[in-house]
Length: 266
Image 1 (cartoon, one colour):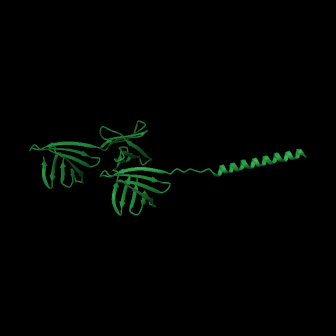
Image 2 (cartoon, rainbow, N blue to C red):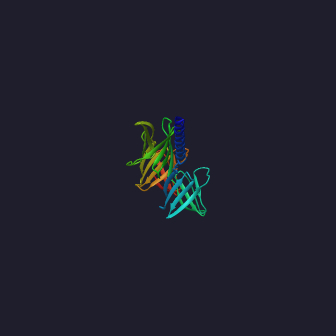
Image 3 (cartoon, rainbow, N blue to C red):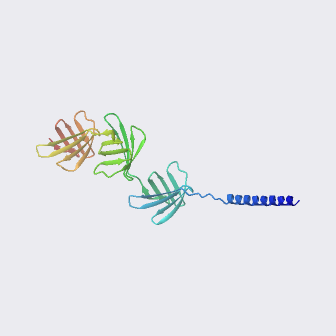
């Protein structure tokens, strides 16, 4: 009888201990809290007048906080077809890429547009190189023969352009461009340039640089300022012009007019 009582007592103690451990485990599990870190992206932009716009985008909450001219502006994200769009009762922020526009009560108070230059070149063997150069961020996007995008970072050349990444290197001056991959040239383009200098009986000089690739000409009368001309379609000879100047010629005979009046003729 005594053994039976002792056995029952031990079983009861074990059961109570098990219940306590189970309760502790449940309490431990229910007290666990998941911590979520907001996805925040910060950016800053400057307009042509030197005004600075600081932006902090909370992608978790769909909000944006701006700091402009000492004022803190809280905005809520809207649904845009592309780019970003945030608003409140007075302000509206829109943008795509690095191009940003901020309005207050419908009036534009800040705008920033990257300086973008697009160029397409074709080599003698038919290869194409499309380039988008962002002079604001000093970067370039290059597409060889319409292929994948090659992202390059601007370097500090003595002259011309120089962009590179770990694999590619782009160098050039004017329209003369060379692209290398792992040190090997994969694209090269050189404009067809023809230069000529003339002197007439009156002692006037006319220096001309013809770019047959781009169909343009640079003309210098008596060593003066550069005159940029665009090629036309003559029946024969050469014909270049702009809004003020016109250059015509055949063989070694050339005439340059300004506002319809001859300023050089040989």
